[in-house]
Image 1 (tube, chains in turn brown, green):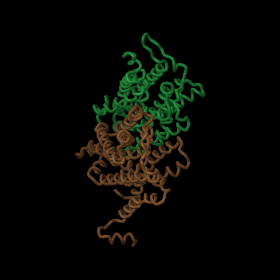
Image 2 (cartoon, helix red, strand yellow):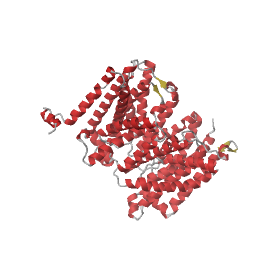
Image 3 (cartoon, chains in turn cyan, purple):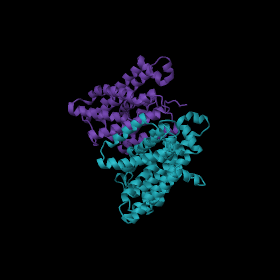
Image 4 (cartoon, rainbow over the protein chains, first blue to last red):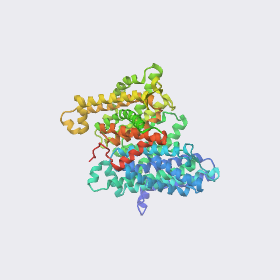
Amino acid sequence: MTLLDQIRIATPHRLETRSLILLSLALVLFLLPLLQVVSDGYNYVLHVLMVIFMYIAMASGWNIIGGYAGYTSLGHPVFFALGAYFSGVLLVYRGWSPFWTAPIAGLVATLFGFAFGLVALRTRGPAFVISTIALLLLAQLILDNWEWVGGSNGLSLPMIGWPYRFYKIPFYYGMLLTALLAIWVSYRIRHSKLGLFLRAIAMDETKAEVAGIDTRMCKVIAFAISAFFAGVCGALWGYQQTYLRPTIFLTIGAAADLVLINLVGGRGTVAGPVLGAALRVGLDELVVNQVGSTELNITVTGLLMVLIVLFFPGGIVGALRERRHLPRLLDWD
Amino acid sequence: MTSGLQILILGLALGGVYALMAIGLSLTYGVMRILNLAHAAFMVLGAYLAYWALQILHIDPLVSILINGPLFFILGIVLYRILFVPLAGRSRYTEATLLLSFGLALGIEGIMGAMWTGIYRLANPSYATRSLVFGSFYIPEGQMYATAASLGILIALWGFLQKTRLGRAIRATMQNRTAAQIVGVHVERISALAFGLGMASAGVSGSLLSFLFPFFPGKHWQWISILLSLVVLGGMGSLIGTVVGALMLAVASVYVSSALGPTWSPATFYAALFLVLMIRPQGLFGKREV
């Protein structure tokens, strides 16, 4: 009997090993910035983790519509940009800190996602993905030509007033909290009636509708919730970058990232996007930053996508589950 | 400000080319329920090949149609066999093909970027800068040749679909795949043929694109959303709908371009797409999917 088994038996409320490990991981992540406070030199680590949290939050959000419901969205960069510009404009023109306007930016993205979803999700099938591409390009066109928010030159934001040594820490916590919220929401939806309906829609929308599910409302709500996390991340990321420009947010490449993260990790699972995001950022730091980025990066993304769809459709979590090798630690469904 | 009739003439001429560009998308969706997001990427690839042919071999883009057509037809059949046949029988087939073609589009975009860099290109055959004037109306000479070529190819395609056995088999598969199979249509072979034809239309319209519109590798995203917008307006899987949608939206975009400036002409297509989804999601000629 392992030590962990003994702990499990000894714990009165049957706190599972899995929860224990995950909780301690969360605790470590919460305490990590202390290292930077105690001794300088951890800004890089904090930055990489922050980017991982951001991708976890956005990919987990994307998974709610793209994974559970099976409706691929390439429009999520629009919500990211919406959040970034909403909080950025309030910072520049009103001096309000994005740290407290970020949740509002998320809600604005949610509202916008709801309204857009009502139109784009009326039909079944591929018309939705078409409309999300069109939304992305339309947003590009509008932001490029809207001088009040800087047009294609973009908008410079004032720097956060913290000393350089500590300035990553608030962003780190902001993204960490957003990521944890995203995972929690994703988990709760997966285990709710809505989650059941969404999976029914992904499998056979006609049958789901015949069974009495209001498929349109379910899809629209899922889409609106998933937009929230992109909005919050955008608000924080824009502030962190200190400038907003349409071309850094609104690209198909950014949309492809979210799709690929979910495909690699496993679409429609709670743990999939988390794994995928960590892999995506980790590999980026290890490979791309060493080799340097080229035009061919996007080819690698594309080829990976093709290979995964052909040979590995369930992603890591899906493939492990199929072979019954999925460790309990990753089985969050 | 351009006169109304002038706008109509330019719009219809443009619409003929758009119809050729989009017909392949409509065909592959109609026959196989594959939404090929890489269609416009192949079109831009065709434009680069035509550009190359003109620069290096001095082959006129209108002549390189004859090269691009067969080349992309064969490429289409090969790609279909390698990439799409293994997906047959998947429970979420359309979605899998969508992601696959999305990956394909990204792959091609990166390769084009590596080979030809991101700068704007435009082939310049002698007729590209000339205009023909009829009384008070004008039409760019290149545009006129491109429209004439498009109409010729579309009519040939129409004749093929109406008059030949293979064409009838394609239409039968579009109408009802299972029933077509029952009456003896070899749907797998027909699907490969339709995918090849769709890709050929991408390659051929790439030749026309090369001297009509400036292009760079990432441009295909704008093209795919323009083309998909008019396919959705016409009704997904309806070939005649695609042609009508192309003509309508091309005229509308020329009008918007003359009223608000060329920057906003792509917005016509996006706005039209959202309007269609709001008012008549199945499109003009589409059937409501049950």
